[in-house]
Length: 238
Image (cartoon, rainbow, N blue to C red; front, side, top):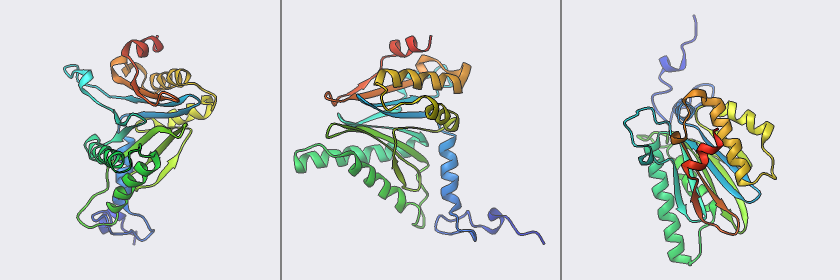
Protein backbone atom coordinates (compact mmCIF):
# COMPACT_ATOMS: atom_id res chain seq x y z
CA UNK A 1 0.00 0.00 0.00
CA UNK A 2 1.37 3.37 -1.03
CA UNK A 3 1.78 5.90 1.80
CA UNK A 4 -0.72 8.78 1.65
CA UNK A 5 0.72 12.18 0.77
CA UNK A 6 0.76 15.01 3.30
CA UNK A 7 -2.31 16.76 1.92
CA UNK A 8 -4.47 13.61 2.09
CA UNK A 9 -3.40 13.06 5.71
CA UNK A 10 -4.38 16.64 6.57
CA UNK A 11 -0.99 17.82 7.80
CA UNK A 12 -1.35 21.03 5.80
CA UNK A 13 -4.69 22.03 7.35
CA UNK A 14 -3.35 23.56 10.57
CA UNK A 15 -0.35 25.79 11.10
CA UNK A 16 0.47 24.04 14.40
CA UNK A 17 0.60 20.50 12.98
CA UNK A 18 3.96 18.98 12.05
CA UNK A 19 4.07 16.40 9.28
CA UNK A 20 5.78 13.05 10.11
CA UNK A 21 9.00 14.25 8.48
CA UNK A 22 9.11 17.39 10.64
CA UNK A 23 7.71 20.01 8.28
CA UNK A 24 5.18 22.79 8.79
CA UNK A 25 3.47 22.69 5.42
CA UNK A 26 1.53 25.95 5.79
CA UNK A 27 4.85 27.75 6.32
CA UNK A 28 6.28 26.13 3.20
CA UNK A 29 3.23 27.24 1.23
CA UNK A 30 3.84 30.80 2.46
CA UNK A 31 7.40 30.60 1.11
CA UNK A 32 6.01 29.52 -2.27
CA UNK A 33 3.73 32.57 -2.23
CA UNK A 34 6.81 34.77 -1.83
CA UNK A 35 8.48 33.15 -4.86
CA UNK A 36 5.41 34.11 -6.93
CA UNK A 37 5.63 37.74 -5.78
CA UNK A 38 7.20 40.58 -7.72
CA UNK A 39 10.99 40.76 -7.66
CA UNK A 40 12.95 42.89 -5.19
CA UNK A 41 16.73 43.38 -5.02
CA UNK A 42 18.75 44.81 -2.14
CA UNK A 43 22.41 45.85 -2.00
CA UNK A 44 24.76 47.11 0.70
CA UNK A 45 27.21 49.30 -1.21
CA UNK A 46 30.35 51.10 -0.10
CA UNK A 47 28.54 54.47 -0.02
CA UNK A 48 25.09 53.38 1.20
CA UNK A 49 22.21 50.97 0.68
CA UNK A 50 19.99 50.39 -2.35
CA UNK A 51 16.62 48.75 -3.01
CA UNK A 52 15.28 48.07 -6.51
CA UNK A 53 11.90 46.42 -7.15
CA UNK A 54 9.53 45.40 -9.90
CA UNK A 55 6.08 46.91 -9.33
CA UNK A 56 4.60 44.36 -11.77
CA UNK A 57 2.00 46.64 -13.33
CA UNK A 58 0.11 44.39 -15.75
CA UNK A 59 -3.00 46.54 -16.28
CA UNK A 60 -2.39 49.53 -18.57
CA UNK A 61 -5.22 51.44 -16.87
CA UNK A 62 -3.39 51.46 -13.52
CA UNK A 63 -1.52 54.69 -12.70
CA UNK A 64 2.08 53.51 -12.08
CA UNK A 65 2.88 56.17 -9.45
CA UNK A 66 -0.01 54.90 -7.30
CA UNK A 67 1.73 51.52 -6.80
CA UNK A 68 4.10 51.61 -3.83
CA UNK A 69 6.77 48.93 -3.36
CA UNK A 70 9.44 50.70 -1.26
CA UNK A 71 8.46 52.19 2.08
CA UNK A 72 10.29 54.70 4.26
CA UNK A 73 10.39 53.70 7.95
CA UNK A 74 12.61 56.59 9.01
CA UNK A 75 15.13 58.69 7.10
CA UNK A 76 17.78 56.01 7.70
CA UNK A 77 15.63 52.85 7.17
CA UNK A 78 13.58 51.59 4.20
CA UNK A 79 11.78 48.33 3.39
CA UNK A 80 10.56 46.48 0.30
CA UNK A 81 8.65 43.21 0.03
CA UNK A 82 7.75 40.22 -2.14
CA UNK A 83 4.61 38.15 -1.70
CA UNK A 84 1.24 39.33 -0.40
CA UNK A 85 1.70 43.10 -0.24
CA UNK A 86 -1.34 43.60 2.01
CA UNK A 87 0.47 41.41 4.57
CA UNK A 88 3.57 43.58 4.11
CA UNK A 89 1.62 46.77 4.85
CA UNK A 90 0.70 45.46 8.32
CA UNK A 91 4.39 44.86 9.05
CA UNK A 92 5.39 48.23 7.55
CA UNK A 93 2.89 50.07 9.76
CA UNK A 94 4.23 48.21 12.80
CA UNK A 95 7.82 49.14 11.94
CA UNK A 96 6.92 52.82 11.46
CA UNK A 97 5.12 52.94 14.82
CA UNK A 98 8.04 51.22 16.59
CA UNK A 99 10.48 53.71 15.05
CA UNK A 100 8.35 56.68 16.16
CA UNK A 101 7.95 55.27 19.69
CA UNK A 102 11.72 54.79 19.98
CA UNK A 103 12.37 58.38 18.88
CA UNK A 104 9.83 59.79 21.37
CA UNK A 105 11.09 57.60 24.23
CA UNK A 106 14.86 57.81 23.72
CA UNK A 107 15.25 60.89 21.48
CA UNK A 108 17.44 58.88 19.10
CA UNK A 109 16.84 56.94 15.86
CA UNK A 110 16.02 53.26 16.21
CA UNK A 111 18.68 50.80 15.01
CA UNK A 112 17.86 48.53 12.09
CA UNK A 113 18.29 45.24 13.94
CA UNK A 114 15.68 46.27 16.52
CA UNK A 115 13.15 46.75 13.70
CA UNK A 116 14.15 43.43 12.09
CA UNK A 117 13.82 41.47 15.34
CA UNK A 118 10.45 43.01 16.19
CA UNK A 119 8.96 42.11 12.79
CA UNK A 120 10.48 38.62 12.91
CA UNK A 121 9.08 38.00 16.39
CA UNK A 122 5.58 38.70 15.06
CA UNK A 123 6.19 36.48 12.03
CA UNK A 124 7.38 33.64 14.27
CA UNK A 125 4.33 33.86 16.54
CA UNK A 126 2.17 33.29 13.46
CA UNK A 127 3.88 29.93 12.83
CA UNK A 128 2.89 28.38 16.16
CA UNK A 129 -0.51 29.84 17.07
CA UNK A 130 -3.81 28.19 16.22
CA UNK A 131 -6.26 30.25 14.17
CA UNK A 132 -3.49 32.25 12.51
CA UNK A 133 -1.66 31.85 9.23
CA UNK A 134 1.92 32.80 8.40
CA UNK A 135 2.61 36.17 6.83
CA UNK A 136 2.91 35.40 3.11
CA UNK A 137 5.68 37.90 2.59
CA UNK A 138 9.46 38.28 2.72
CA UNK A 139 11.04 41.65 3.47
CA UNK A 140 14.28 43.40 2.57
CA UNK A 141 15.14 45.91 5.29
CA UNK A 142 17.98 48.32 4.45
CA UNK A 143 19.50 51.31 6.15
CA UNK A 144 22.44 53.05 7.79
CA UNK A 145 23.46 52.23 11.39
CA UNK A 146 26.27 54.28 12.99
CA UNK A 147 27.86 54.96 9.63
CA UNK A 148 27.54 51.36 8.41
CA UNK A 149 25.26 50.27 5.51
CA UNK A 150 23.18 47.24 6.52
CA UNK A 151 20.80 44.96 4.60
CA UNK A 152 18.61 42.23 6.14
CA UNK A 153 16.26 39.68 4.59
CA UNK A 154 13.39 38.11 6.55
CA UNK A 155 11.19 35.19 5.43
CA UNK A 156 7.68 34.03 6.48
CA UNK A 157 9.09 31.89 9.33
CA UNK A 158 10.67 34.84 11.12
CA UNK A 159 14.25 33.94 10.20
CA UNK A 160 16.52 36.84 9.29
CA UNK A 161 20.01 37.16 7.81
CA UNK A 162 22.26 40.08 6.98
CA UNK A 163 23.41 40.24 3.35
CA UNK A 164 25.77 42.13 1.11
CA UNK A 165 23.27 41.69 -1.73
CA UNK A 166 20.19 39.51 -2.19
CA UNK A 167 16.93 39.10 -4.12
CA UNK A 168 13.43 37.89 -3.25
CA UNK A 169 10.36 37.09 -5.31
CA UNK A 170 9.92 35.98 -8.91
CA UNK A 171 13.20 35.07 -10.59
CA UNK A 172 15.19 35.33 -7.35
CA UNK A 173 17.38 32.33 -8.26
CA UNK A 174 18.35 33.81 -11.64
CA UNK A 175 19.05 37.25 -10.13
CA UNK A 176 21.10 35.76 -7.28
CA UNK A 177 23.28 34.02 -9.88
CA UNK A 178 23.92 37.42 -11.44
CA UNK A 179 24.70 38.91 -8.02
CA UNK A 180 27.11 36.06 -7.18
CA UNK A 181 28.94 36.75 -10.43
CA UNK A 182 28.90 40.55 -10.68
CA UNK A 183 28.34 42.10 -7.25
CA UNK A 184 31.41 43.51 -5.48
CA UNK A 185 31.76 45.05 -2.02
CA UNK A 186 33.43 48.10 -3.60
CA UNK A 187 30.37 48.95 -5.71
CA UNK A 188 28.82 52.40 -5.40
CA UNK A 189 25.07 52.96 -5.32
CA UNK A 190 25.16 54.08 -8.97
CA UNK A 191 26.98 50.89 -10.00
CA UNK A 192 24.60 48.77 -7.94
CA UNK A 193 21.60 50.49 -9.50
CA UNK A 194 22.90 49.74 -12.98
CA UNK A 195 23.54 46.08 -12.08
CA UNK A 196 20.06 45.72 -10.52
CA UNK A 197 18.22 47.29 -13.45
CA UNK A 198 20.13 45.14 -15.94
CA UNK A 199 19.38 42.03 -13.86
CA UNK A 200 15.65 42.79 -13.86
CA UNK A 201 15.78 43.53 -17.57
CA UNK A 202 17.50 40.21 -18.26
CA UNK A 203 15.19 38.09 -16.08
CA UNK A 204 11.87 39.77 -16.95
CA UNK A 205 12.88 40.34 -20.59
CA UNK A 206 10.35 42.15 -22.80
CA UNK A 207 7.85 42.71 -19.99
CA UNK A 208 9.99 45.28 -18.19
CA UNK A 209 9.52 49.03 -18.65
CA UNK A 210 10.83 52.01 -16.63
CA UNK A 211 7.35 52.53 -15.14
CA UNK A 212 7.50 49.06 -13.59
CA UNK A 213 10.74 49.67 -11.69
CA UNK A 214 10.87 51.39 -8.30
CA UNK A 215 14.23 52.21 -6.72
CA UNK A 216 15.45 54.08 -3.65
CA UNK A 217 18.71 54.56 -1.77
CA UNK A 218 20.16 55.97 1.45
CA UNK A 219 23.67 57.42 1.21
CA UNK A 220 26.31 57.36 3.91
CA UNK A 221 26.71 60.73 5.60
CA UNK A 222 23.40 61.92 4.18
CA UNK A 223 21.19 59.29 5.86
CA UNK A 224 18.24 60.45 3.78
CA UNK A 225 15.70 58.23 2.00
CA UNK A 226 15.79 59.17 -1.70
CA UNK A 227 13.76 57.80 -4.60
CA UNK A 228 15.46 57.24 -7.98
CA UNK A 229 13.76 59.19 -10.78
CA UNK A 230 12.06 57.41 -13.68
CA UNK A 231 14.28 59.42 -16.03
CA UNK A 232 17.39 57.88 -14.46
CA UNK A 233 15.92 54.37 -14.65
CA UNK A 234 15.00 54.89 -18.32
CA UNK A 235 18.58 55.99 -19.06
CA UNK A 236 19.95 52.81 -17.49
CA UNK A 237 17.59 50.61 -19.54
CA UNK A 238 18.80 51.91 -22.91
